Length: 99
Length: 139
Image (cartoon, rainbow over all chains, first blue to last red; front, side):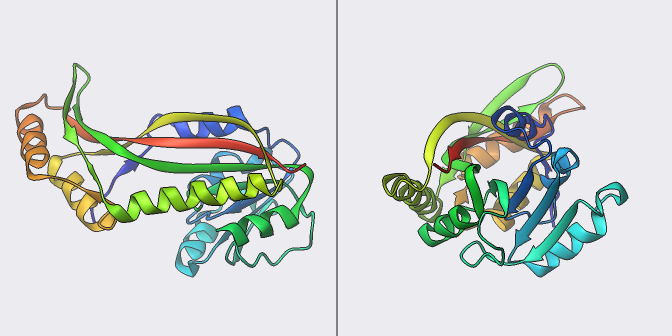
């Protein structure tokens, strides 16, 4: 498979931080995939849950998870249409390339 | 999509924020770039499926807004680059990864191959995707 470098200038991260401050907040990322975007903001959050319907991507995300984020970031195999969480669990939801 | 937005609203706290971050089909530019110069070699072709996806997402957000599930606060477009070491790698990616929603016509393929082959030693190929980011707030 061909390899692409995605967003070498990190424009996406810059805009995400410009639009929302995740510091100390409970974050839900919908469509987290392998965690490419997750690693760029999660350390500042209180907690981050990434969901994705693709189990293989979540496996990669879990393997790649930095050790200092183990207690803060977790991944759940789920779809946005059926979120396995109680109401009002999160302060911020990020639809990451998934709408 | 509307059902997903309803679910997101349910799990968001009052006054919570929803960030919608996604690419938008808009005949993204193909470029050959080096430290010395940037040369545009063509544009991708937007295929019907990609355009339909964008419209469906826009429609879902309009519906969520009309239902007063979320209030739009801020919106912006910005560029996001995909970069490859060669023209052939870019073509392979487009053909394999974007096959359903992005196409590449022969003229752009030829122009990109030629510009890359004749370009500086550090030349790379990139596609300039158009991104949309919107901040919504749950009332």
